[in-house]
Length: 263
Image (cartoon, rainbow, N blue to C red; front, top):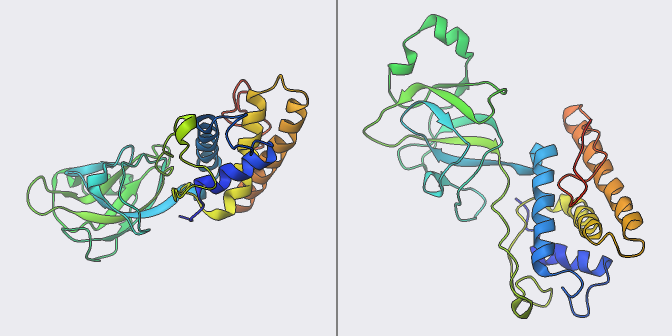
């Protein structure tokens, strides 16, 4: 993950909206943080690579595993950040075993077709062991995968390296007007949690979001539309370049009073 500071993005948004003397007068810090958080979610939804990461994850007993919610205690990170509860969107791959403590690289893990495994060894869900040799995954059920041999219910823990897509941990909510957390002249170093390359997209999203929430102001809707078009055009082109699929976004996802749409 990049080192894009929350206060840097919010200052850029404040400057565009002429809300700098003092900052957070026209739009509260809390509203701006909410806009930024929505922008991050939109990025991870339409550009999965924005939320891609690799972690060491402690597996649950049995063959069935889930990334719907992975507790911080079952995570070891590689990006220098403290582990936090993780809510996965999509599994990318299992890479290797990481020993009983999650720190010792071990055997590689391959992918296997579950239906073929079911035919060849119908009882494979009940034959436990370690380390993990293979995993099965169906992208139509993106939060679940199966490992073989299944993880024993007793004995040493089983950790593996997992590559997945998950939004970064939520940005801490802004403070009261007398104690803003993300003023540009402050010392806060909280990061957004996505790579710096997405700064322009988050800026466009936040400006459009806030202008749409202040739609009664003269010219707000017209200005918002320019940023909506810039955000959607960037997302559409990046998604098409990465996946060959254009989501064809036409409205701002999660914007207030303007439901997101894709066709």
